[in-house]
Image (tube, rainbow, N blue to C red; front, side, top):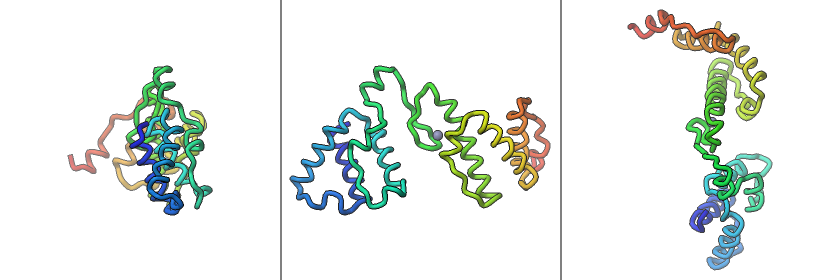
Length: 190
Ligand SMILES: [Zn+2]
């Protein structure tokens, strides 16, 4: 990343930790940026920025300052990304950078997790742990998803939602989705 990118990173730290770097005058602060740049330069801005968001979101980091070495700890350098030939795309649901090779798998899980999260909040008033659902292995997640849909089906009040849930259940059970849209058409007055 460029020195301008590093500037944005450091400025962001100062937004969340207002006393960060306050011991420095202008010259001192630019020295700090040069030093951070030395460490961050081989990495992509998006990756570091995401790590910074994670740092601030984590309640354990309350009142703590991030440091550049901590931020890049598990990141892949830009040059190494090119070497392995991996391409990264941003998931338009959760905003994470995803290896293109695994994008479909990620997106599939990510949209299911979002759906479960949304429906659980709406019908059960319960906030579920998205990270845990993202990390669960395939079989475990699918069993959970199936169980969730089966519990949800009797309590949803919209025909369209019912139809979607029934089809999700069918797909999770390895059956063909139903194309009988009678209920849906009735609700939409078609
Ligand atoms: Zn996602």
